[in-house]
Image (cartoon, rainbow, N blue to C red):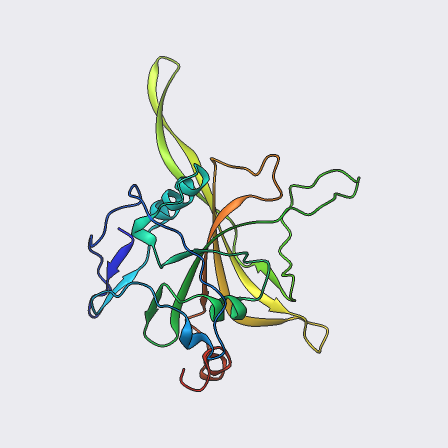
Length: 234
């Protein structure tokens, strides 16, 4: 289930909430007030050691429900928000929305329903299906790993015998956030992002592909990087 419980010394999961087939209300938080991010309403309280951490299957479940027009996702209320992840920097998103989970040293995670953006034109002048990873306020998301196809097994009959083949349900991509540096090489920030897209919607006739995003700071961040992101209390 999407709600997990930490274990010691390793983490252990247990079913503490309904699965991705139940219903949730997605809400968008207003901009924070003059007092800063402290005025953002936190997500629903959970028992100590329990945190929001959906599996890949649950991520696709949330996304597919949204694609199908289900805006009532009660099992993710206060954890997943609607926001344009390519409209502003991850630090700006952090200040406008509460983290879905906080675990240990800077281990915060934010979840957003958004969409990729297609590049407006190809070289030949036609419509492009290539995603535009530039952020409007500066910086860009760069692919860090090869795409991972999220598959399910589907049985079919072939040549008079039953076989199993794998059919992709969606794709997971991982990105790092970069800003233009003072040197020839752009600067990599400690911000990372996972993007989940579904085979149920390829963006045909739209400006982009619906997606679910997890935005977080790398666990390998240095103390100085954490202070840059979260302030001196990091």
